[in-house]
Length: 229
Image (cartoon, rainbow, N blue to C red; front, side, top):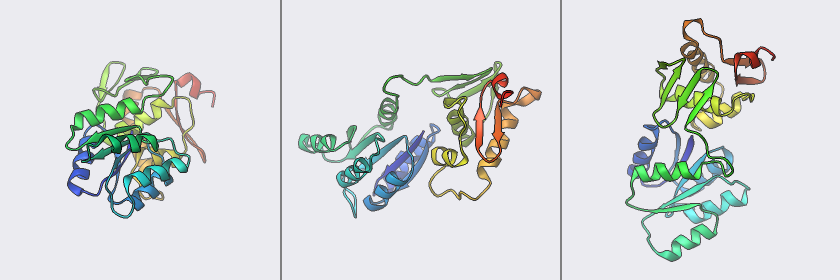
C-alpha cells in the first residue's frame, strides 16, 4: 500500500514512515498543510495519515480540500487534541478515523488495514497467481512451495501486480502506487525492478507470469491466459 503522511513534527513523521516502511508500505511525507493538500490531490494513495495542527493549512482544511477534489482516499487524523468536539468536527468534514497522540504504531497499522479494505469485499491476505503465492501478513512469497526472497520494493511491486491479476497496468500507474512522489518518472527504475522481479519469480526456467505489452504496460496472469495476448 502507498500512504501519504502529512505531519510537521519531523520526529513523528519519521517514526510513522519507518514503522510503515518496515511492513512493506510505500510512504510519501509532507511537512506542511499546503504541500500535503497538493500531494493528496495530485497523486494516488491508498490512505492518508493527517496531522490536525499543521503550518500553512490546518489538517481540517486539507481534509476539506481532498474531499472537495472528489477524492475518497481514507484519511486518519493524528492529533494531540482529545476533545470530543474536535473529533466530531473532522469526522463530519470527511475524515474516516481519529487517533490521539501518543499512539501505537501497531494500532495505526491495524486501522490503516481496516480502512483500506474494499467495502464489498475484504482483501485476502494470501494472494495467488498460478503457482505463485504472496502472504501480506508474513511478507512471504513462494512459488510451488519454494520461498522467494524479495526486497521491500519488489514485494510491494509484486503485491500491486497480483492484486490486479489479468489487468494491464501502465508504467504511470505502477509509479503512482508503488514508488514515492520524488521518484524520477524518466528513470529506468521501474523497468529494472520488474526485470529483477521476473528473474526471481521465474527461477529454474519456470513459466513467465509477467508480460510486457510494448507501449502499454505490464500484466500478470496465468501462463495460459498470457499466451492469448
